[in-house]
Image (cartoon, rainbow, N blue to C red; front, side, top):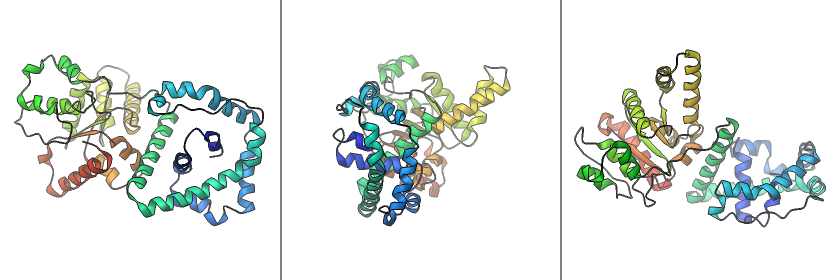
Length: 351
C-alpha cells in the first residue's frame, strides 16, 4: 500500500484504487479490515503514528532496492510475463536520490488516505453490485492464487495453449475423416452445448474436441471434467493423463490415495510416493493444472462461497466445463449443478 504512489502516471487512478483494494483485502475480508482500521479513526494521529512506526521498520536500502526493481527490472518482467500484450507499456522514471526521504515523510498519510478511499469504494461496489462486485471477487481470486502459488514455490504455470484438435487427433492416432458425425460437429461449436450419444461412441473424445473449439483454435485456458463417482474420476484421470501427460489434475475426497497408488506403481519407496501424492494434490488445489478431473460438488464450493471461493471463481472464468454422466445425479442435486453452471456461463463466460 505504501508504494502504490510510485505507479502514479503508469496506471490510471481508478486502477490504482482497484489494486489498493486487492492488496488490502487479499488476506482479510473487508469487515475485518474495517475493524482494524475504522474509517472514523483513519484521520486520527494515533492511527498515523502507528502506521509511521510500522513503516519506519523498513530499512532505507530496502526502499532504494524496491525502487530500483520497479524502475530497472519491471519492464523485463512485464515482457517475460506477457503483460505488455495487455497494454502495460509505461514504467516509472529512474532515479533514487530522494526516494527514501520522501517515503518517510509521506507514506503513512498516503496509506491512511488510500484506506479511506478504499472503504468508500467498496461501499459503492456493494451498493451497485453487478459487474464491479464480480470484478472485485475475481481480482481478489487472482491475488490469492498468485500469493499461494508463490509461497509454495510452484514455478511456471502449465498451459493448454498448444493443445489443438489436430494434436489430439494425432495423439489418438485417428484422422478427422474417421470421426463420428457428432465428434466432428462439436469441433466447431463456440458456445455451450448438449451432446447425447450412445455408450462407446466417443463422447469423451468429442468433449475434448469441443474444448478446443473456441474461436482461438486452441483449447480453453482451463478445462474441468466432472464425473459422479470416484472410480470413474480415477479412470478418466488415467485416460486424460495418457494423452496430455503432466497437464491433468485429480480432485476428490480420496484423490491423494488414488495418486499414491499410481505413483507407487513406478516407485518402490512408499514414503517418497506418499510425499509426491500429497504434493500433486496440493498443486491441484493451487490451480496449477489447467485440465482438472473432479466432482461437480467441487464447483458448489464457489456457489456457496466457502473459504477460497474467490480463487475458484477466478479459475472458472472463460473455462470449458464438461458435465459427464449427468443421469447419475438425484434431481435436487442436478438442479444445484445446473444452477451453478448457469452462474458460470452468465457471469464468468464459461462454456
